Image (cartoon, rainbow, N blue to C red):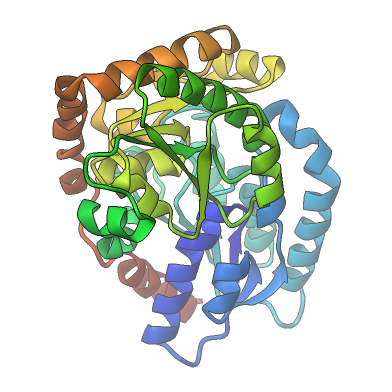
Amino acid sequence: MLVAGEASGDLHGAALCRALRELDPRCRLFGMGGGRMAAEGMDVLVDVTAKAVTGGSEAFGQVPRLYRAYRELRAVLEGPDRPSVLVLIDFPEFNLRLARAARRARVPVVYFIPPQVWAWRPWRVKMIRQVVSLVLAVFPFEAPLYRRAGVPVDFVGHPLLDQLQAAPAREVARRRLGIADRTPVVALLPGSRHQEIVRMLPPMRNAAAEIARAVPGTRFVLGLAPTIERALVTEHLAGGPPVEIVESQTHDVIRAADLALVTSGTVTLEAALLGTPMVVCYRLSLASELMVRLLIRVPWVSLANLTLGRAVVPELYRQTMMDERLAQEALRLLTDAGAREAQRAAFGELAGQLGEPGVATRAARRVLAQAGAA
């Protein structure tokens, strides 16, 4: 059984499903995920990926739906068709509860892309030690942290390394999108959740308007996540400069861009690995912002800065700063080649820190080993 609750988890879960079936064509895959995991042969019992939300006050309205999903999966874990192993992919609020149920049912639990206990809620590591059989770490600094806490852990590398192998060169990406070589391009990457579009696209649109005035001829391209309806994006782009909406070509959009305005998440790591300078932003509700200030243990929110251990990309997340500074930071990078090159030089350090390609296959071998030992 594999369990993913967001678009990024569905993407990484699909690669893992493919690797599992390649290594053992007889294995049956089922659980919670989205269209990508289904396409790789998983029997999707529940799909919550299209309506995933962030934590804090935004998540309260989703509790009944998630609880129904939890009960359905728990019933399978406790029933006669229980899996040989449960694979959890990110989505910790939900998955740690399911891990408890799996432990009670004596089903081994493998956690792929584990909770970021190094960033916040460090006490979770005690629970993970109690209910998880093996953590598959995706960042190199996670392995010693879990090991010190007595949690079995293997560093397999970050799954983006596999997915980005097929990313096009900049020239190819621009040709596919019909962009001339010298045209300034700004990518808008507002996120894969409904609430992210509602909160983040208006300030991105306003920043784009400022950029268009300051740098005439700039082309704006938005990478549309598969979980987001085009109509929602069109609604929140209204009143701004022309923006081309591109579906299912996020890596092309990132590669083609001179600069990206990015909602904090996995895509910040994608942009960094693809060498595209960026400004990272996030807007939470006031209650969630206060919660984050109280609980977070690291000085940054973007995975690029966290992985490198220093402030390489600008981060804007406070409501009072967003509208004022997003355009300023974007224009500074767009008009200063030295600032862009400084980011690219730092990004060059990332790939070597995140392991080697073949992540899904390494993870799949460890999952099958746990299943065989059950």
